Length: 240
Image (cartoon, rainbow, N blue to C red; front, top):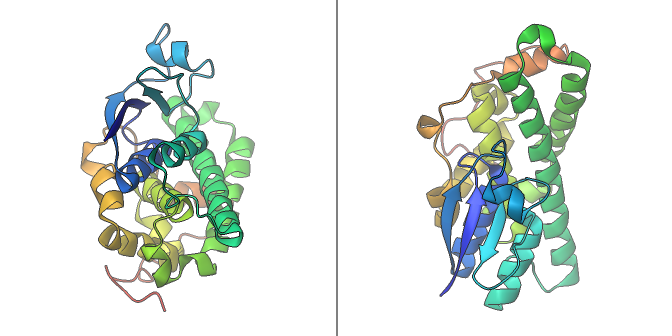
């Protein structure tokens, strides 16, 4: 079995994506949780950008970012599970990954602004710009065919990345997300039941000790009414 060290942060959707992908292809990784803020850290030595995650294989140069790590995992294990060989399936999986990664980046930026700046110091125009990206992506996913029930059986990087990003949004912004986009977040619940590797590597809310940002605060930036809390389907509700 292949092995390497993964520098990551516990709640990171990008780290979750790599952990899930590695579990699927049978590549053993050893987790090391690090901070992006620590000067002189190993993270900054191995990745000049100081961004997570970074894979540090034995006897090999460090590999970053998460999408490149996924390519490496596929190459080293000789599989096509993560990135399909068929051209159309490949493009679909990579496009879904790109959408998921962009959505995750906007979410991380928003969360960081809420975490590190007091309300008078926050740039509301910039926050609204990032929140608009999130809303557009989630509106798109709510009606997208890529989130049909059968997609949870597809163990490619598009499914993995979407699941990890949506799980992160649920952790950081709460039930307001599922109330506004019920089909999308019900899909994640199905994925957690259908894909053991996704569920077993997912960060847990009770293990996170940072600030929580209610989704309604984001909706307020865009002058959106809070979602109706009665619209969320029960766990395991139909996606049809």
